[in-house]
Image (cartoon, rainbow, N blue to C red; front, side, top):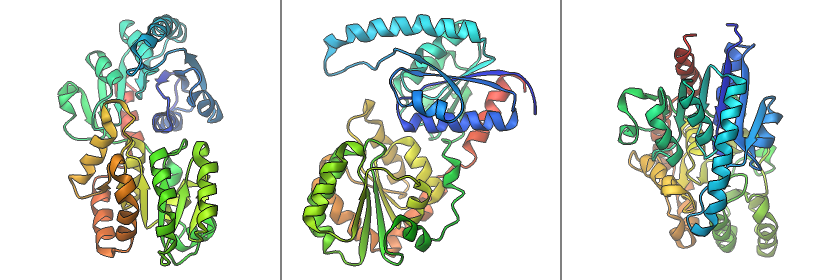
Amino acid sequence: MSGNKKFIISGGGTGGHIFPALSIAGEIRRRMPEADILFVGAEGRMEMERVPAAGYRIKGLPVMGFDRAHLLRNFKVVYQLLKSMRMAHDIIADFKPDVAVGVGGYASGPTLKAAQKMGIPTLLQEQNSFAGVTNKQLAAGARRICVAYEGMERFFPADRIVMTGNPIRRNLLDCDATPQDARRAMGVEPEKRTILVVGGSLGARSVNQTISAGLEVIKEAHDVQVIWQTGKVNGAGCKEALDVSGAQNVTQMAFVDNMALAYRAADLVVSRAGASSISELQALGKPVILVPSPNVAEDHQTKNAQALVNHNAAIMVRDADAPSHLVDCMLRTVRDEGVLATLSQNVTQMALPDSAEKIVDEIFKLINV
């Protein structure tokens, strides 16, 4: 398919927003190589680096999130929002997109609102089981709303909702290594039961503290090994704790360069409950213990996790309970073949494959392609 249609994709702030956005852009480009794609993100956030690295143009807005803990600091937030709205209007007027796509995060608010005011069709992608504030505000003017969970009509007009799932990084599905080969590549023992603890690019502080405190217990679990991704911020302290413990069955790293291999190596994953992470685990059928972050808007990670727990597709350990429960839970679970098999089967059944393709189908319908 050819053409010179123009697409704006807006949102970001975390990898959980950026990876789906890039997947959507990649599917548009695959079908329409001549498509003109422009991203709009938030200044200073990771999309300003990740998007150009993937080969796309991006413009940044000075928009910021509201500070719920310190309300007086929001005078600057309001000023930056008004400035961002003017800039978004100018970007839309100059670029003249055929359609605008919002993937969530506060950067998408000014961009999609400007597009709607100018009569440009808009599509929202809502990743979470509990809709974000920005998408709820934009829903009335959106032509299509792509979701990953049932029951989203409590947030959005039912006649515009399409169940598509969340796009995931395609390379995760392309890994054909055996678990043993993946473990060798990760530098761990090939035949030992393996737990992958992953907290995202910034790490999960409370999870890291829990693992640090539990290293003496983990050290005695001679039949189990742990791959521990700590993030850069907490990396030095975690490495020091590991060195002091002398645990030989724990491999700590600030980043995991090849998540496809890391997932493949794992019998069990311990993860936060971000929407993108959950979608990846569903697609790969990985048994998982979810530790929802308490530091997110409207506690949406707990709601994401609960949606899986309700289908017996994951185990949830609340962040406040992690210090007393997590290490014991993960060691007990990884040794129970029956529980692992049940979790794997049920989480696989929740997967919604080909999400990027389905979302782009809806985008193209809006512009009669």
